[in-house]
Length: 216
Image 1 (cartoon, helix red, strand yellow):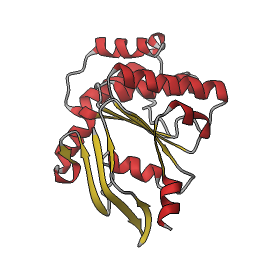
Image 2: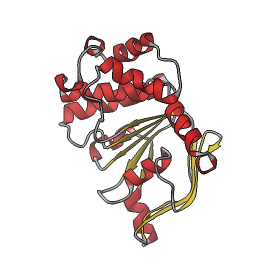
Image 3: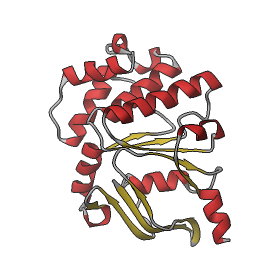
Image 4: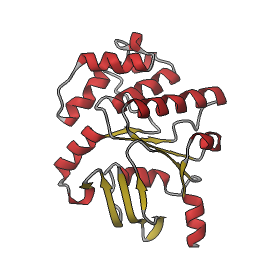
């Protein structure tokens, strides 16, 4: 579903990311491991088309992201990629329903309130549709951020450190939510983390620390 071909990236002349070829099939669940500074967030941003790599290519489905003009890339991202950032970026002046309706609007898709209700129900926060983000608990906000990420039936879901600030019980709940949602939509899931607690949930793992060590 996505292919990374000899990706590398530099900041201020220093290589912060260097990868051989990585090939993930549709519906695969991947874990991207590495300590802080290993390049996890950089790689997620490259996969999402938010950052151009210094060299190499990113192919999502049959699209080479480098070949898409900016406007087309933005629409492609909105339609096919769901992103869960470390900071949830829910708009505080909009209700949860309105936050979710922004996802299809930004992608140029029809806004469907029934779809909002369906997604919120699947994440057990249907009763929070008319609430504002600041009135929700941290866990409920996380669910809302996941809901927004899957609104457009993405083929690829990217999550950046979704469990780093959570206790063991909450960590397990969030991972199960992400796995369940990815399975529901047959989406390829890639979670970037340094959280060793969740390794057992993932058959496919990419450890940037080990790759860096091999290249040193």
